[in-house]
Image 1: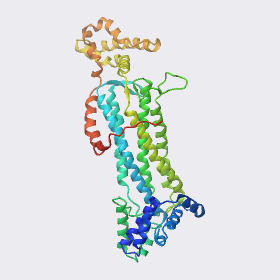
Image 2 (image 1 turned 30 degrees about the vertical axis):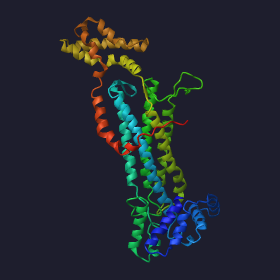
Image 3 (image 1 turned 180 degrees about the vertical axis):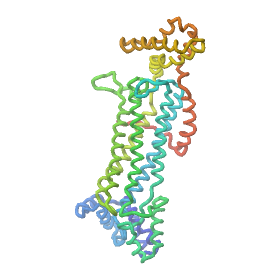
Image 4 (image 1 turned 180 degrees about the horizontal axis):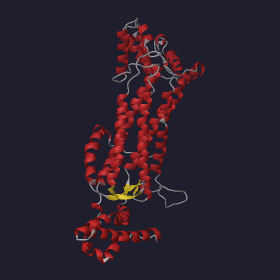
Length: 448
């Protein structure tokens, strides 16, 4: 159908510019633009070994009056490449609202948990506290970068337009009897009618395959982001701090009934890995385009281009489903904080003792010895962190015993995380979502 539309377009405009094309020919083509005899086209392709010409012959069969002027002056890449550029543009237009919805759901999650303290991790080892919402903002920042990348890649697309067999427009210059202005007018009019603001000024037989690199790199980068987010969710699920949605009758394992496997996040990681891997195709394809073009790009692109967009599409749908149903377990998070916070609070205890008249070196040595003893209980005996109890029993710390609860309040360890969340959402995320406000209500029910 797209081919017929492009062929019809390529006759409509030349008529307007003075070529001897009749209204009857155009009307005939328009009336059959969506009547595609796929069986005939398949039979023609078996004979001709040429997909575009197979459809040209099929179209001409249903449009005998227009047959003499179908594909006039054109080449296969006039049909194929221009169609690919339309599909790339339309693909981005499908993905961008989906990405916006994921960002919106995650922004709501970040806002809700902006001030809920949680253990931070570096090297996957307990580090200083952050908040659940602040961690979500790290995910959001990457997704926001992806949205800008997708939008830029979409907006940078140009149309191939009317360029001829090697990009010189020679056939069209001949059709218009050497009138360069009419050739340029045709190129501009076709580009406008296809909905593009600009066409590439120079092409070979094809538009440069660097365009495919640019488009698919934005999708591969999105894949890397999603893989990171969903890996984090899987790690947190292991800690039982956060879980993805889990249906009432869902089975986590065929052998272990108690399991709640993060299968949605695992699916996203699996597909995101494939999305990243697809990036190799356009890179290699662009690098081996000989001179004005070679055909070993065609079969590859028919797989890699649509597959990248389809993969990104289902990844975003699945991630939206996850972000709409994330479950947080504050009590588990609190228990993990209690287990680690006494070690993290040692500097606060030292500072409080110094303010109460103690000597920093003496206090440091006291805390060091008690910390090592508490660590031995945790690591060698499998017990709980009892550093706080040891501090409370040591007479040395009597001057600050009344301050211990305040010194160990998790909210005193999260710095400006809540304020960072509020400013980040307000200044960077909400404005980014503004163009998509009318498309935010779509919910995703995951079909397994």
